[in-house]
Length: 193
View 1 (cartoon, one colour):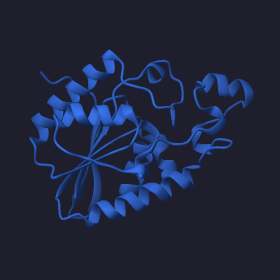
View 2 (cartoon, rainbow, N blue to C red):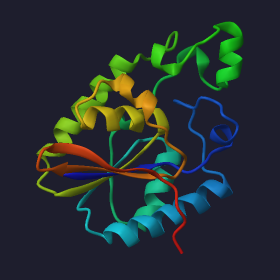
View 3 (cartoon, helix red, strand yellow):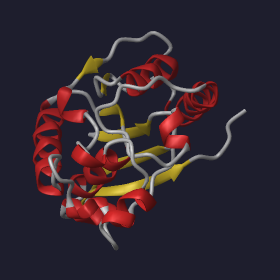
View 4 (cartoon, rainbow, N blue to C red):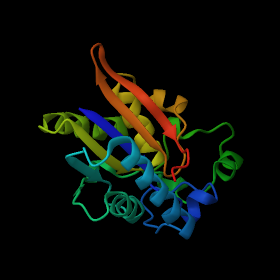
């Protein structure tokens, strides 16, 4: 299965660099415009060939899905929720590093999740997605979750997501090639007209 990954458009917190896990924020006007750009990009690249679509239950991902899919149905999947940042929810990396010098999300969050826990959710989702008879699917979710999903989809540990930067409303593709799954497009934020 070819998986098209779309990160949600900007929210107030993503624009300010604040870690947004379970806080259910709406898209900003810029975020809605970014999602419309992603719709154009997905349509130009894939038309409407994806037969199955999934979204995180959080409003920012669902709104992005609704804009990109233009009203076509999608399945909400709890396993696509963003990383639970625990005590670090709503804080910027700089604020966290004032408390814990050198911290990165890849070390986990107190009273939140670890990369291993998110990887387990992602692995479960990927297993079920590949049971679908569809040949193309589209996933609407979040920055850290999709970075871990991208890593796991190509057989790498979740921590490999550290090397996979991902901007808001970007489009990425994991494709099944002859030699196995491969990242064939990552973090595409180019403008479509």
